[in-house]
Image (cartoon, rainbow over all chains, first blue to last red; front, top):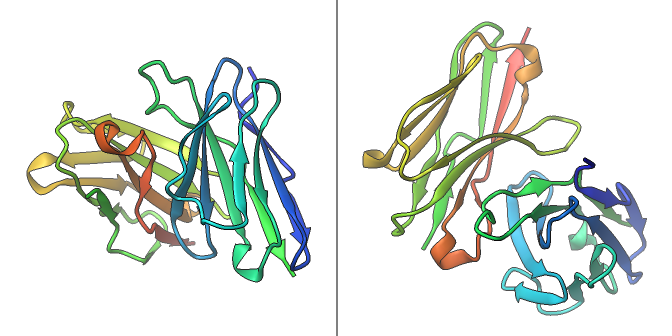
Length: 115
Length: 116
């Protein structure tokens, strides 16, 4: 049973480019969380999605950031026009939901570097 | 509001010493879950333990033990006979289902350095 997959593991973008981060949840999981870890800091919640729905995006910056979790395929975190301050590790976690949403299984993270 | 405080930014001990990492949480909810994660230098997050608010029993797993005390809102983590491989950043985290859509609320982490 494969764990949570994230790709790419490392991503380098120049300022102004777009970054797309992918998260494939564990089989049977329909809930996905994205967290961001700035250098030398703890993690911060960004967004919570279920299939085809954004449930809570209160942690997402208002501009340039968007997330989706389509019916088919991975969840995508998209950052447009990246800036140096976007450099961070982005972790996704998947959950089975259905009363077990406190069980969150983390992927290995994507380390984004903006040059 | 919910909050997790890990007051120790960095701890350095010599191998084989015991070390305790502190975690203090804040919530008004009666149902909540507490977690500890380890982040080794390689960067991934390793789940260590989950505790729900109704279970105050202390937990021991090998050299690791956890002390959950609701009276002081603390969930401290002790490593006995520390080893160099224990060097990592350790995060304490909280979920309060009622108010936060099950998002994890994280402490700032404690960097643990075990010297040989």
